[in-house]
Each structure stands twice: as C-alpha cells, then as structure tokens.
Length: 568
Image (cartoon, rainbow, N blue to C red; front, side, top):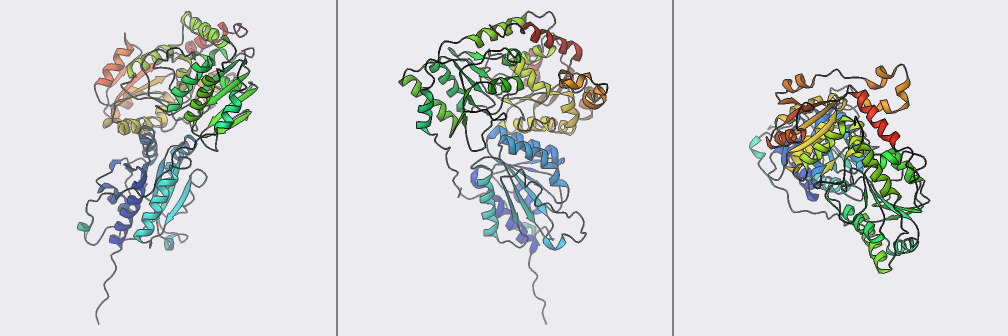
C-alpha cells in the first residue's frame, strides 16, 4: 500500500496570495506596507517578490496604517497594508476611519485563521471579518480553500471599490492554513502583475442646465465663493479662481484649499476670514458658492450657513454640508461645475453686484496682526515653514491648534504649497507617520509641523525618520493649548482633563531614535534653519517652544482689535 501524496498547502497559499495581489495591482497599487507576523507569511512573501511593488516594512501596525495613508495622499493611488491575525489589524482602525472620511484609497489585507480555528479557543483567533464594516467601502473574504481565479477576482473587486464610486478603505480578510511556506521554497519566484483588467470610470459630468439656471440668479446680487479643503493640485482650485474673476467676487480660501500661496493675479483671495468672521456682525452676501470639504474654521462654517442662497458643488452623493444649509446641491466633477459656471457668467455677462466688505475686513485683519506689540509666536513659524517648503517640499500640518495656526497666519504671498493634513476626522494620532508616508510616496524631503501631544501620540514614528527624510517641527506649548480657547479653560479640572501636558523631552526622544535635534525658536533665522534641515536630506526633529499664555493673549488681542470692524 502506498501513501497518497499530500497537497502542498503552502504552495497553494503562495499562488493564491500572488493571484490576490495581481488583482489588486489592476487599478494602480504600487506601494505595500507590511508588519511582521506568521499567519500573513504568504501575503508578505508575495508582496516582497513582486517586481512592480515598493515594499515598506513597519513593525508598529498603527504607524504602518498612517504611513500607508500618507502614501495614498502623496500618490493618489491605493496603498496596501498586510498584517497577521488577531489584534494586529485592529491597530489599523484609526487610519481606516480617516481614510473613510477623507476619501483616501487604502487596501487592508488581514491574514486570518481558517474557519475551523474560530470559536474554539485557538490562539490568535478572533472574529475580525467585520472589524472595518462601518468604515470600509467594501468588506471581502477570501476563504482558505479559494482557487487562484477566485482570489484574483476578489483582488480586482477590492481595487475597484477603493477607488470608485467614492475612494476609501476596503478590507479583504484572507484565511490561511498551515503550512504557510511551500514545500519547495524555490517555487516562490519573482513575479510581475498582468495588465490592468478593471477600468475605473471618469468623474461624473455635472448637470449643465441646473448650473445655468442657478447662475442666472447671480446678476445684481452680492456674492462670494468659499473653497474648503482640496487635495493638492486639485483642478477645482484654479477653476474657483477663474470663476471668482469672471464674477468679480471675493474668494475665501481655506489653508488646505491650495489657494493661499502660488499667486493669483486679479483674484480677491481672502486669508484671514477666521479672525473677522467670528464676530456676529460680520456682513453676509446674498449668495455663496461652496466647493471642497468643510473649512478648518468653525467660525467660517457658521458664517457660511447664514448665507441665504448657497450653491454647493459636490463630487458625489456624500456631499459635505455639516450645518445642512445648502439651498441647492449640484453633483458632478467640481472643477467641471466651476468651469461651466464661469463659461455661463462670461457668455451672459453675469457679474455680482459690487461688494468689497470682505476685502476691507481682510486688509484690516492683516494690518491689525502686523500692528500687534506681541503677536503669537506661531505666526513667525507658519511664515518660515511656508517659505522653506515652498514648491520644493510637501508640508504636513497636524491637527488641533497647529492647523488652525496655518489658517490664521498663512498668507497669500509666496510659492505654491503642497499642504497636507489628516482632516477626515481630525485626529492627532498618526500624524508623523502620515508625513513619513507622504515623503516616501512623493520621493521628496518633507516638512511636518505638529504639536507636542501629536508627537506623544505617534512617538514610534520617529523610527521611520531614520530612513525617510522628514524634518519634523514640534511646537512645545505644554499640551492641548487649543482647549484654552474653549469654555473648558475656566474649569478647575482644566489642566488634568484637557491640557494634559505630556512632559516629553523632544531632545531625549530624538536621541532615543538617533535623530539630529535642535531648538528652532532660538534660531536667528528660522526659515534658513528649516531650509538647511531640508537640504540635509535626512530625518530631523526640531523643537519650537511657545509660551502658551502669551500666545493666547496675542490671539485675543488680534480678535478684539477686529471686534468693531464687522460692520465695515
């Protein structure tokens, strides 16, 4: 009696993993981020031996996920994550939520135990197939006995779903049985993906009659355009400028709109809206055109909701209107919608009624800031960072007070900026890891400005800076300084429950990860120091120490100086 030959399960897992990744590559996957683990061996090996992929190995799964998010932001293409079973993929959740809300394409490939090892107390086995169900565009499963054709089809469907109709994360849970390595390891040869087999449709064309009908209502009425957050190089930014010029109306530019820098001759770009629109008597136009995600400033958002006739240009059915104030919504490619409105305005010689209230308030705010005896220290840092980055380096800003500093102090002069932030859910976790992913995805030295709590939340990301050229500037203001501007500041538990100073020595943290360190606030010329750090081409940690109370006093003095200007 002869023994039957046993099937090579390791070889089958390898082929299935190659087929899955081949399907995923069909719509642009080129970067794969792997965190070490045993159950994910076939997936990791297949990714490592694909000649078309750039592989990044990051041990901390949470940092890896935000790094992949940065790759997606920088390239516009999906980035994939691979991790083992158990709690490992759960660390992806914060980045997946951010990707969901900010429409970034992520592919989450979690290895899993096979079905027979679930619900029986097996080690490192848990229900993980629905981990991302509330935030994923699609949730797919690849069984342990799936064939290669099945695996390739799952990959193609996942790749398409993370791009269309609304970009975002897609979860593929891959069950794998042991053994995880082929009987003949030589069978795991280098491979390349086949030709793309799934075509993602172009952006949807807006309704031209609907736009033309609304445009007819502009003549003789005051109006403005509000441009919120857009991806760097989004054509909607320049299209908004063109429309503002055609209508001769002011354009309120969020710091993440791409319109604060780069020069827009003839356009009336408003940069200090948060400072003067926080006053209840700020003037409101007859109509407002909105494009992009919500602005950083809550004051600007609340002011916009007071406008009686709002046209919102949305890219898809999940349009952004937090205060539900839009009178009309037109879906389609926002850049095409703006261009169509500009064409109608020029053809019909439509112009808004003369209205320069926002221009005068913007000029008053700029003058008041320049005239402060003790301006917030962050104003100088924002100017230095913008000038040092310019068109040479992507610039990432963390959430909480830092992004609001860029809203307050980023002016319209200087070179065009590629400005990034995690504003989908505005978390302070994973910010430095995202900046590292942007640097890796863009292939360019990157400048990151973050708060001390954001650094504390992502301390492991300093390990990435040993290999990725990110110059990280941490603003040390002793904790959550943004809460000092809110009503919580008056409570006796303020420091314990909200300020939460991290007590972190940035210099010691840099030494722990073998990174260069310097105090930026003591530099005679912070812009030159930043330029030199970027030119060095290596990860660096710089510290900018700020007196929190003095900074807050400077902001309040600025806002108070504008309190009587709202009726101008």
